[in-house]
Length: 91
Image 1 (cartoon, rainbow, N blue to C red):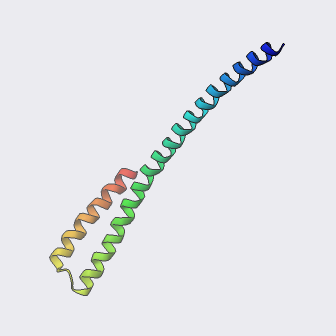
Image 2 (tube, rainbow, N blue to C red):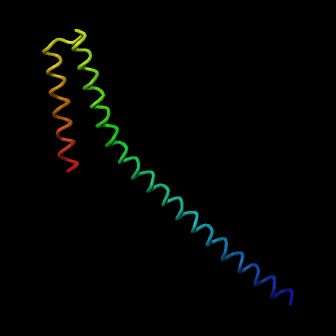
Image 3 (cartoon, rainbow, N blue to C red):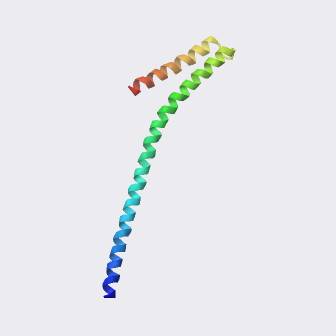
């Protein structure tokens, strides 16, 4: 009777270990996918926010006289073009 109980327990333990390992692997993959998706969305948001912040900063520099009119227009034109492209891509 004791041999049967030990054999049954070993089989149960062996099966449980593989189930736990499988669940852990699935959990790691799921967490990795979630992190990847969140990173992609954050990069898009951060890029737009950074461009708006940069536009505000160059406007301040121009107003204070640290940028010439030509420099200001050149930088502003590039930023506005980039923001327009991002807007079109989001639609």
